[in-house]
Length: 220
Image (cartoon, rainbow, N blue to C red; front, side, top):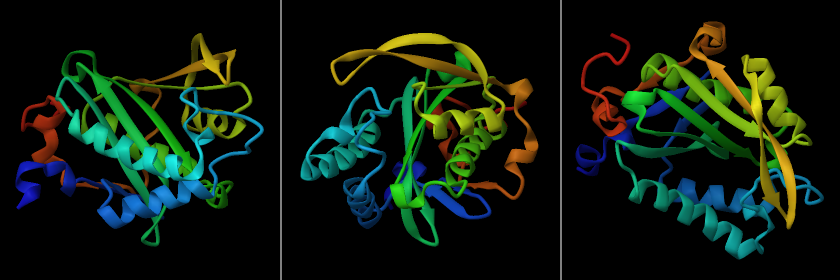
């Protein structure tokens, strides 16, 4: 079976409302459709890549290609886990967790997007908390980093709620202009286990070598 060769297919994060996992073909198609329906106010751009400015057909294809690319380029020393976020079995967004040289550095980064119609209900916080639970409690990370532009109030609010600290700034090109992005860092010591209440991780053990870890408890 494919899962025997690609155990990430069996990895799932379960929260009180959501399930996060690698998408099936139908779920990936639905996720692409969701991106076409809108991710943010077109008047602003929260992503430095600008992928949401693409025409609808290209935007949908970019979601699919991005997922395929991340799986196709997977390496234990350089990986990006792009999970579909499901509520009541339907895709509502995407949540990524990535790292380079993780066994040595033990630092992960995250990125996400949520369909417009699903925003404002706390889903963004819950799905970020799910991958932080995987990072800290499942993989033994010591730091999690992320970033957001100053006008991305929703993303910054999620980070503040989960305990991230300011970690400097960097300049990014956005729609032909330079925008200063706020970097944020969450040390393991600041991770509040209450944010993981009611969450569970299934199928992790067979995946550990794909994250560059051994088949023993990564926290030991």
